[in-house]
Length: 230
Image 1: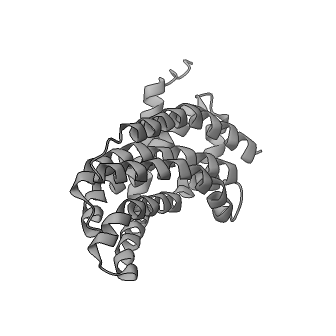
Image 2: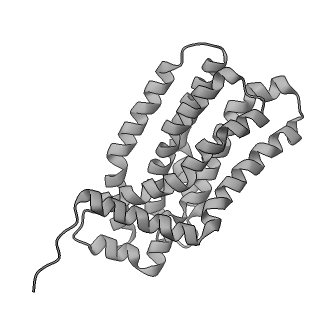
């Protein structure tokens, strides 16, 4: 009897990501809840601090990025939770296929379901907060570079707490401090753009953080999953 031909890295990546996306489509709440949370948070700020245009324009970058960060955090816990509950995670760990590829595929699916919608809806949210038109390009660039970092770093925390029944609070305590550099440089870039100042330095630092997270996170998550499930 012939042995099954092993999947290439690319085939394995697409297979795992397609599975996660397909599961998410059947559970539409997993996609809509973080997005609805983001819109509600952004909507509440003008109601809470008043409709003063100058004030909203000044604080809009921070509001959008904090809301995006919390929205991403809200959706993180389900990244490995369902797989842990139904035994799929154990099968992944026992599989001869490279675990880091499967982890990267799952993180990519998470970003497509949470980070990409945030990027697409960001211009409308910026318009609601009267953001300076000069800052729009910087907003889109920082979100495009920064939201994958949120998924990559967040996955490490999820992997460490996947075996805990109530790991949500611990996950927040682990992950939020690691998000601070992204928040600082992203809002700094947007504020610099609004003042018509160069912000390439901020973008370069965020890009470096993305490369670092993309390189190290899949391996760190793989190690954390093995520790958490033993």
